[in-house]
Length: 66
Image (cartoon, rainbow, N blue to C red; front, side):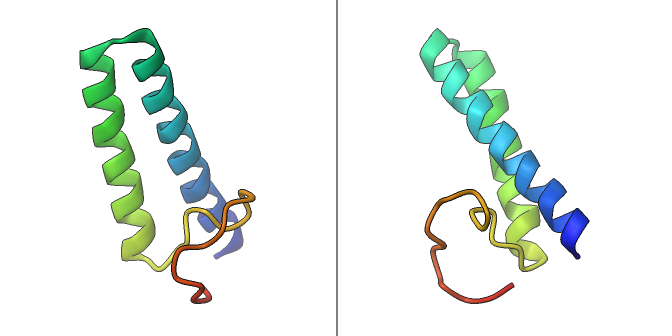
């Protein structure tokens, strides 16, 4: 699942960056859209057993292998 897992992680990273950018811009609409995208990306990752933080330098939440 290597390439697919990395593409899911990249989607999560991009969504997190969009949330931060929308917050910094104080753009309520962009923030709502970005948060929805982040929710979707995280739901997909967790639904198929991918740790979205693995390989990003972040500490995994559960410690369970993928």
